[in-house]
Image (spheres, rainbow, N blue to C red):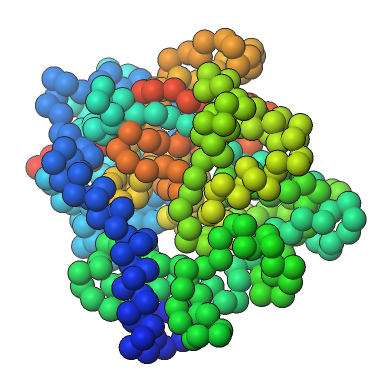
Length: 410
């Protein structure tokens, strides 16, 4: 199924589609094959369960559970969710969250909650890296200056989804492609062939790109636009007291490449000093190299206007410190999770200060281009100064667990 322009693929175009499939999906197959050996999740015995303590006293957790319930109630009741060798339908995911929420509403003690999980829930741990650790990073909802109309002060567009962007559902061509992500492409007007969509460098070089992708806003800084893409959502301060919410709506389908890693490889920023704040400072200090660095990441994100949010990949709102993004190919969407990580002191936001150990219940409600494999997770930190600081500097290893109700204990 093609979701734009209703283009019908002819025989020659199908050949091109198969070539694109090999390019875009070859690495996905390799990841799946690798994980068949180790598996992204390992089922724990009750004696191996961690101590379940929530260092934020469950603040915001009930709302986040409700958001996952909203997601599960909109999909077929028998849709399967895989935990290692076990498969649970969406209806069971609902019951699992409902029972957990009802117990929280009673205000249980930590010991009572741990007893509930030990006796009625299965716990699975993310495989992580060779040390069974998961690298936690953070993302937040930024706010940048912008306007609804272009001007000399606000010349950088935040594009909406282009009219010529095609999203191709491979499963409609053959069952062997079920589970693969959709391909993003366009039709070459000269040859009428289906080819990959424009790269970041190509998009920024097309002077009239705004005629095929109407800007939702115009920003003061191109760097601001890039960081909005990284975060996936944000707010635009229109200068008149109004804030315009913008949200990820599509991408160009090109592979995400980390500009942070590029700057480390170029020996511009040390690995130890790398952060979102360090990247911004470097870009602002080297305007002549902004094109070089940003174009290293061929991926390009398009936005839509929103009245609420921010929303994760499940189409439900994400909650500060209660929503996590993982690799959607490996881990069950919408699931209840528990993380052991580190968070900074709100009263002493110093990047040089050691962060405190923290554990939290979260919901798996988002994904991202940079969040790949069983050893990566991205914690949504909300908005404001603490959220920006935490998401900018967060790069700590910890552990990630998934909880689901034991079907025999309903």
